[in-house]
Image (tube, rainbow, N blue to C red; front, side):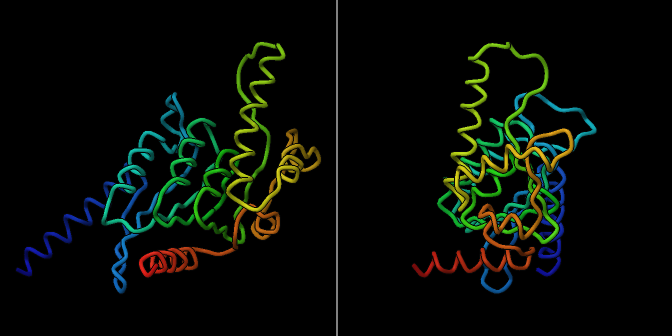
Length: 233
């Protein structure tokens, strides 16, 4: 019996290691309250419809979206913890992940480690509660694109439409006003040769984007409390 248990634990550890390596995901089992938390990491660049180079750390939205659907349909998983350290990436993919997280019926908490820039901002605020470590950063800037564009009014109208989708989502899911968010986006005196603002730790909270400064201890404790409140309710 003991031998079989050891084999099961070893197989579970091997399975978890493979999941972390392939998708950056893991299911945490609480020892005391037996609450099951699913961990999702958003790292590197958020990859969209095109594959990035092999030496680039990426988060693939085709991995994240099905997993979020499975989490919503699962009776075993009670909450979701999202760890972010991302430079941003594909707008459509990032918004898709953010919308999926925002529509989960289960308690969700995000934790910004390192940075959550650009399209990482909507993902960070899409959860029920959000944290950022004291040294964590967020870069707020307008939508931009690489390569050639058609220099006609319709192109710039399309960029504005994309920008409005992002600002609308962010303002709906945190406590920053649209005017303040756009002010941060259009700042010209902070980023070298770029438009936008970089905020660190407490500054992000003061601007109403993230709820609280804290680390993994606070994030997991908050998620357990939210799960317990939902169960009692």
